[in-house]
Image 1: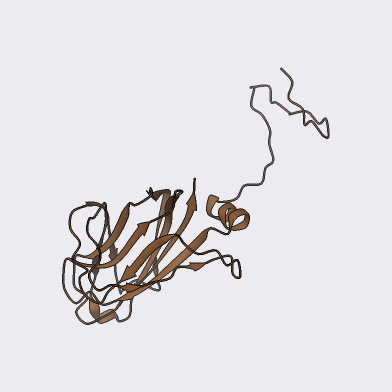
Image 2: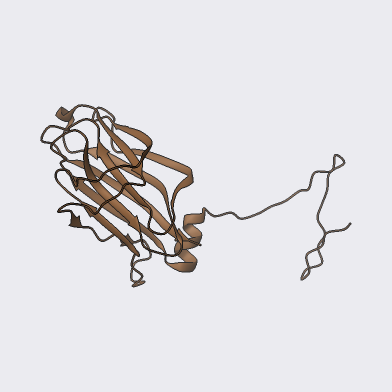
Length: 186
């Protein structure tokens, strides 16, 4: 079988061992969704949970397409806070108690597309129950700059699924700053 480009009629070069030679251009999927669909967002969180086991961030996908989180960034406002652990919990039930609505920013500035999701934060506990801990991240104020966690396969929330950040260690009067990077894709 011979492989040729239908426009240029240039054929695919193959080595003696049967390997194809290719030059290609790739782009991360989040770049594709930003460029083609204007559907990539960042939610900026700034909260002081004020206790341990406090749900201080809530995200619920309301869209028919999957909401996919590909990166989380975090830092503390003061190195005196000590190391803070944050559980990423999925599948919680109930409605957030007295949370503040947060509007994720579209990375395609000026597109007018908004995130079809409920996004809230709270200085304190939103009193949500259930769910499963997906991961635990540690924010170390001794680290230089912000810390980043990449989820290569993405944390995928189907319609009406939820994700919560829960403080496992109280930052004792200090603010936890986090950015959640996500996009929608069907």
